[in-house]
Amino acid sequence: MELTMTTRQHPLHHLRHGQALALQYAAQILINSQRDPRRALSGAQLAATNAVNTTALGCQYAARILLPFVVELALKALIGKHNNDQGSWGHHLSKLYDELPANVQAELERDFAHIKRTEMPAETRLARDILADHHHDFPDWRYLDDPNKLVSGPVDTLQYVACSILNVYNST
Image 1 (cartoon, rainbow, N blue to C red):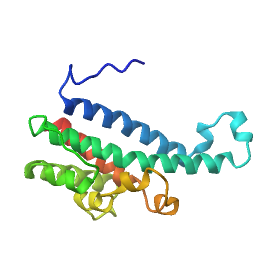
Image 2: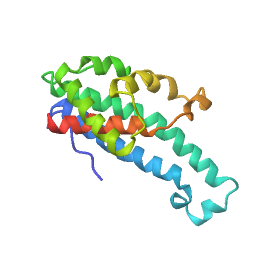
Image 3: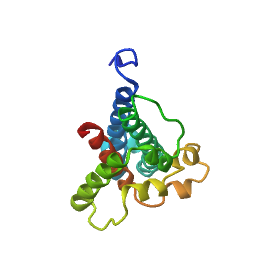
Image 4: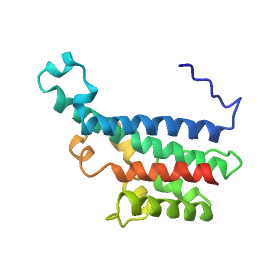
């Protein structure tokens, strides 16, 4: 597969949106593989000692490292779309959220509330609160320095926030 989307053909926010979407799908594959690692391994790989547990852990690590980056790219795409393609810098998710216009933040919260009702009815936090909880994940987690912290807590909430950001990008 040839990757042909460049900033010469499309504004930078389109490129960031495409990157976020592609990586979000990859993160979902990792989440699904972590839930059922036997389906991701060949027969020979399944025969290896501790392959299933190691695969599940690797998928969990990779998804948790990838998802904050997906959210970062999606936020940067949304910021650029509503800011004449003026880029945003940094990895801090709550700072990026704060750069969104107030009406876009409100739309993001509405979309996330809809997802919560259907997918996570027990979740009470706003998207901005989840982003604050994961504010520094990408810089902190990308080197696996604290793997116990990396594997704690559910990953679905951040995946659903990414979905909302991408939904709002498509609808605004």
